Image (tube, rainbow, N blue to C red; front, side):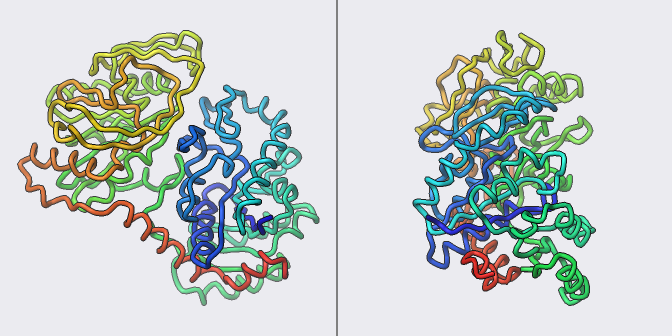
Amino acid sequence: MAKNIMIQGTMSNAGKSLLVAGLCRVFKQDGYRVAPFKSQNMALNSFITAAGGEMGRAQVVQAEAAGIAPDVRMNPILLKPTTDVGSQVIVNGVAQGNMHAMEYYRHKREYVPAILEAYNSLAAENDIIVIEGAGSPAEINLKSEDIVNMGMAELVDAPVLLVGDIDRGGVFAQLYGTVALLEENERKRIKGTVVNKFRGDRSILEPGIVQLEELCGVPVAGVVPYIHVDIDDEDSLSERFRGGNERKAIDVAVIRLPRISNFTDMNVLETYENVSLRYVDRTEELHEPDMIILPGTKSTIADLMWLRQSGLEAAICQHASRGCLIFGICGGYQMLGSKVSDPDQVEAAGVTEITGMGLLDMETVFFGDKVTHQTSGTFAQVEGELSGLSGMDYVGYEIHMGRSGSEQPLVSRENVYGSYIHGIFDAPGIADTVMKALCRKKGLDESVIHSFDREAYRQEQYDILAAAVREGLDMDYVYKVLNREV
């Protein structure tokens, strides 16, 4: 069975996911077979494996860093929020239906066998498992039913490194306060603390580090710098949403829907030097973009109502009438049609039917069974300004409860396009073709955008991450923790 090590954090967004990805890359570089694991993830960014199972995007990134194919065993429980108090529950890649938060809390210990089956199966195939916690292990109101932090560490006898986020301030209080709130048997599992997202001169930290080690009774296993890498991140905490409002030669506006999902679909567009990708949720932020993207959402009807109430629907329709390129993906694609129906309340939005934006000639009906599969093929004849996509190969995956009556991978009408394919811009040449079409439309030379090898770029980012993790962590000590020498 594999050796294991667990990364827990003092809070959400302490940097656990990225550190796990970095450690996976480091262990891979050191010659080990390594896999990530997170027993329970709550995220709207998900992925469909080759076998058709659904899992959290963070574990997909970690698997890529480890150089292995994503597998639902790496994330046996995925919660996709549908409302403020409820989520769709996905177990080992298969949707089990929606569940109220309190109902799930009462029953989640029943998922332990599924968690252990997934973990043990992975452990039998690898040398090292890097486990990620969720939120904080010191949520004292939730600890009794914990299956993702110290509860998970206990199930598989994992040593823990506790990570704090210095960028938010108060890192010493975060780390010591978390340790102080743990039970004695839980404290014994913590073999070191990590100061994450540090900017500046480490020597300034030294007095605090010495005192922190005395207070917590364990070493500070590393001070990891603030890492600037282009790697997929998670949900609404993403720094991408806090980007500037600068508009470059080609300006792309993504509508930041309240329940936005799979916004990683747009990440490839950020890599172009002269393309701005802005997330907007107010009409005054829209300005005059060259392209508007309606992204995926976990609740098409609720977010369409928000779009209407905010005035953004009317603004988008005005831009469409003036020739702006409109592109909808999954839930965003459904919104572009003439009608969205949910007779069985699959989305639990309280509405059984709503008029769509009317920019595409199709209707969507929601059903109880979920479409989850990878997809690939060749675009047939594409009309309009994206006609250059005709005959090009695409790859991606689909995750949706609605059916919209068209089997085409890309549906279009004049300057409006829609697709169910997540990752539609990722295949070689697709994003280039879209950006070049926008250049021609504006009378710009196509050389203002620069083609690149997306896969080589992604692997380079993982190597940059691994180098930063090696620099920040005491890897000799990490290996001692892994080998149970401390």
